[in-house]
Image (cartoon, rainbow over all chains, first blue to last red; front, top):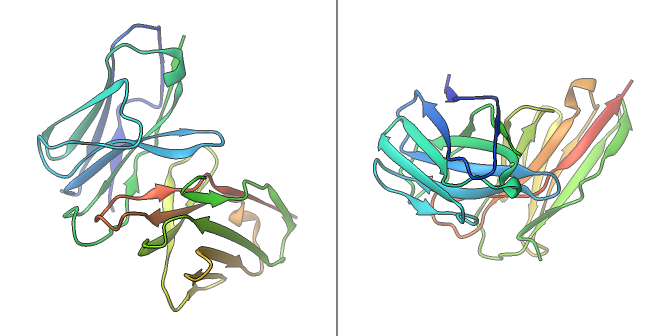
Length: 116
Length: 111
């Protein structure tokens, strides 16, 4: 069974704080993704990575950065949290390679982040 | 215009009913289509892929209409456990694993 874990289920931070969200997958997947999910807007892709140290911007990368130092771990960083980044953050992984076919994405349980 | 559009619902149906959801997509070059299911406060999970010829998995049938750029999901004999949000997912630019999600359609099956 594929397992994607996220470091926290719930997180409360203050405006201006630096926030780290961690995601780990245990299936040796090539691709990893960070989404945010908001009511009425669905899931929106923030960043993705198809290899260690590789990253690509998704649809809404502003205010975020990512790090992938190891294949199994993909971190999302909010450099200076703002209230409009209050959201549900979902990490996903898929087998890959990125190009050539479309694989099922397996999601973690999500982190509900509140920025006060 | 959103790239993938769904009626958010909710669709309230009695147990045993048949219910259908549609989803429209904007990019005619899209190649791959999926339905994901998301339970309340849980992560999305793949329900089924949608093939050009249509496909069936038990009580669930998915259809693709390329000419009109929509996909559908039909659920027969609804169960209480079918209550969830159903996400329409499209591989918009056909560049491997990039997926675009619709906003979801919420289904509530009542006894």
